[in-house]
Length: 304
Ligand code: FAD
Image (tube, rainbow, N blue to C red; front, top):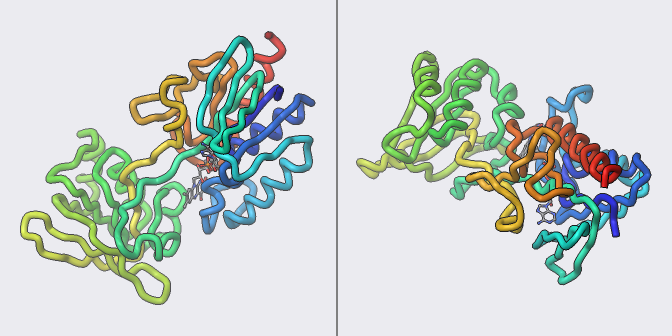
């Protein structure tokens, strides 16, 4: 029986594991893939106090830090269910096993929805980006497109317009879905062009860098090319919470609903990072939230 069992081995989970272990309580961390999204990241320039690093390097540092403590690491294991009987919380695993703990911290993260067009994977991190807060400054003075006209797409266009030379926002529908106030702000910016009713078809490049976004005008069915250096895909962030449906409260977007202390609707179950309703999905925020959830779990343990 664990005192604290952490599900997910990204920055939120690693931080929670270290904070729990430092309390001297029995701590376990289960991850489908230790490192999470950070393992897929090329350059990181906003992890405060580390001016520049790379994803795999940060993952190694995370792992070493966790391993410096008495934490049971269960890598390459997937959680498929969460339930509670009495004071014991049970996690069922894909391999048929079950783990039991007095508290659980959910930190299963999220994944960006992709366009699923030729060239997107090939040029990921070489012009195809998903996070304007992370990669926006790399495109200073350059031309970019933002795919998606919802709130996150229009917010990204406004954000990027202040950094880059020109932004083209590409929306599939005939109109944008973003809030009117955001649209008004975006349309007031001189270096943003909006193209609606457009289906993104292909990412083209040369010398390992993006050069072109090809889209189809859905009205005329004609193909068009936009010359650019960057493409920010903003068509949704999907939390890895399908396995929690029915056991704890999720938002309409599928995010785990947490209170100020990181507690979920099930007593003793806490959550942190990109899988939660906490806004702004960033490494530093996930780590802070992981620490918070862990301290809240400890507080719960000493009271029960
Ligand atoms: P994640 O990193 O998503 O980790 C989730 C963990 O849970 C993983 O270990 C996963 O295997 C595991 N998991 C999921 N489901 C299950 C399950 N059912 N059972 C067991 N384990 C499970 N942020 C920045 O601050 N700066 C950047 O420069 C930056 N660049 C980025 C670039 C890219 C390409 C991407 C994709 C993201 C980037 N981000 C960046 C965002 C940042 O990576 C995330 O905000 C952060 O990793 C979230 O941490 P997390 O621990 O909440 O989740």
